[in-house]
Image 1 (cartoon, one colour):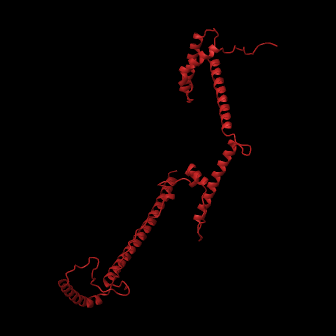
Image 2 (image 1 turned 30 degrees about the horizontal axis):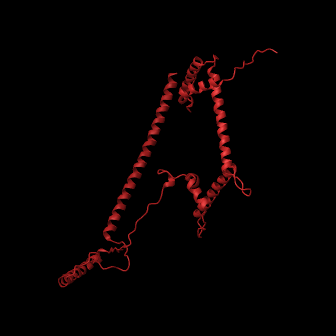
Image 3 (image 1 turned 120 degrees about the horizontal axis):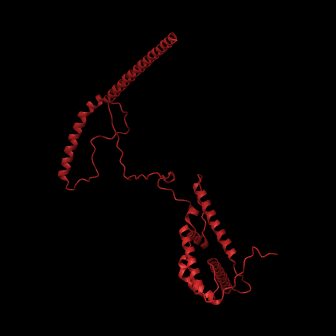
Length: 303
């Protein structure tokens, strides 16, 4: 069997070579261990490995030439071995710290993870049920449910968006809320009186007499009493009626009739204008047809 295509095996790294390589790599560690993977960073990494190759081969006492690919491979294998050792040490330390009595057992990471996932699902389910009950239209009281200590802790740990959903945007339709109307507690209602002209003339004189009497009484009371009148109490000149009268003033009725007449006149004018436009368009069409017929006749005669 021919040896064509076989890779020639290089000699193993000696202790001196290992120390030398590690000391050189420590100078370029900030470039090699950079997590960026874009084109510029990869080019800088390749240049750094070339520099490591030249420095290593120039200062190697054993005289064995090592390429940059071989040095890189050795460095990656060494990192892998160190990670495995760290993981084994951490596992041993965890087992030593959590060794319990024979009756108890050590909780595995998978069991802890499944417990955490199940607790999250339970919290989400309870929150969905509460939302469903709040959105119902029927009557009834909200069922009181006691929260466990674990559930309180889970609510504080979990992401709020996964539990309560996304908050509505200020320009979104979900965020539209009815404006709050503030109503004063002390509301006074006033009754409007609208009467005919005949009743107004008849009641005007009686109101004037009543006003004069009221003014005289007020002057006498102000002179006799020293205490000032309260600002909130104001005597109204009109007497309150027990029911609201219908709006039947002759002035308003006349104005309303005038408006109706004007609207009728405008509508009649608009109808007349529309009819005139229709007649004009019909005549225009007839004339166009006649012109076309004449043009056709002229063309035939020329031929």
